[in-house]
Amino acid sequence: MGGELLPIDPRADIVPFDTANDVLGGTFLSRLNMDLRESKGWSYGVNGDSSVVEHAVPYVVSAGVQADRTGDSLAALNQDIVEFLTAKGVTQEERDRTVANSVQRLPGQFETASSVLTAMMTMDVLKRPDNYYESLPAKYRAQTPTTLDQAARAALDPKSFTWIVVGDAAKVRPQLEKLGMPIEVVDAP
Image (cartoon, rainbow, N blue to C red; front, side):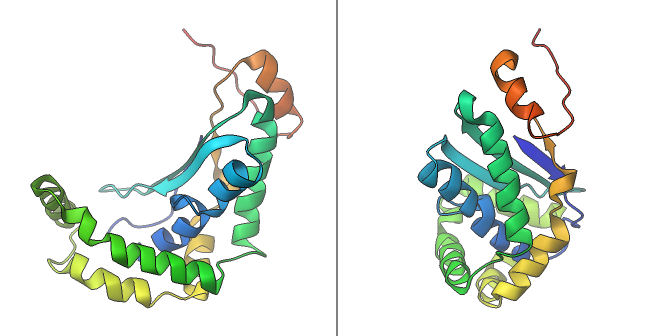
């Protein structure tokens, strides 16, 4: 699991970043999941997601991986994120698929009274207008690969991630040492 606090105002327009993140790590077809789960077979699933709370927007990537592939998985995640933010940004196909998915899943977010109430409370806390959810399809459709790349590049900094690795230190630590990252060991109680 790795994460960072994003330099995003939770009250600002987060649609471009969230949409870009769906390409990177937010859906089953995301690049992180396709690489570690589908291509390499080292994980049952990878997810990258931001949480919008009143005063902050934390971002967390999580992946349960094979113990013998911990170091390789961490290196692959870092490489995938760096490539996404530099040479391999959002493609038109990824943009189209992600926008269609985002628009089509909106109605399902309001299937219960509890979900409607949660949406209303979120709008209140984040000072969003009453028609916020009605405005989302147009905001999604307005995105381009360029706007999505800009949003991701402005928010994510792979060098700012703090990674937490849980496992048998005897098996995992040598793999992590090869990556040249600082390591702090915390023993389980």
